[in-house]
Length: 222
Ligand code: DX5
Ligand code: ZN
Image 1: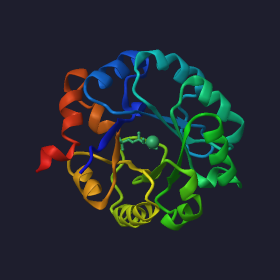
Image 2: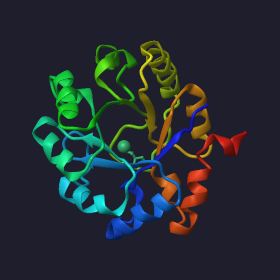
Image 3: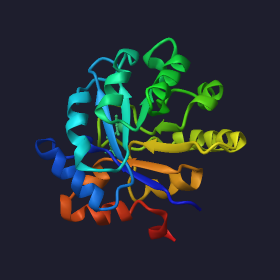
Image 4: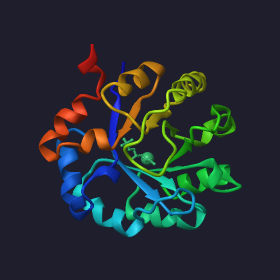
């Protein structure tokens, strides 16, 4: 099995010292940095936008895995590219033309991703498979860290694993919400190749980050 990527969500970091937090998770073994952008409209919470991402960029060379929970998306694509996003993931419900949005993300030099809410079926991805490098399964309703894992999303992971395998393309299958040392191995068994975790990584402060990240990797559970 190829390595499962761990993408800590800085939503659970100490916002007063985000640069230090990013250096700490980088040193602790994070593969990517998951950045949750929320607009208070698409989801009932507010976080950060391109200026903060740009200021965080010099603190790590790891890819910025930017999860947009905003609507509309299109007017902001170039700003996220300039800020240093590597992967830009959007929800299909954020606008009427998700196919065009994914094309625009690639044209701006980033890797396009599509995110599925718990109530959104796997089938929505089928016409988009040629246009995405990452599929994000939300295993909580987006907006907040620290929520409980929604079991029914494992079935969706299995469906998407099958769809991705049929393409022969190297599409990352990522899961986000309620991942911890109990749920992560089950998501990996269902077929994900990347795990987002906020509260499970940042609990206990910087001295615990290494152990917290290692606890999410499959080798710990064999
Ligand atoms: C929720 C965000 C998640 C969140 C996960 O809207 O997309 O990335 O930070 O937090 P945990 O891992 O605590 O469920
Ligand atoms: Zn997220």
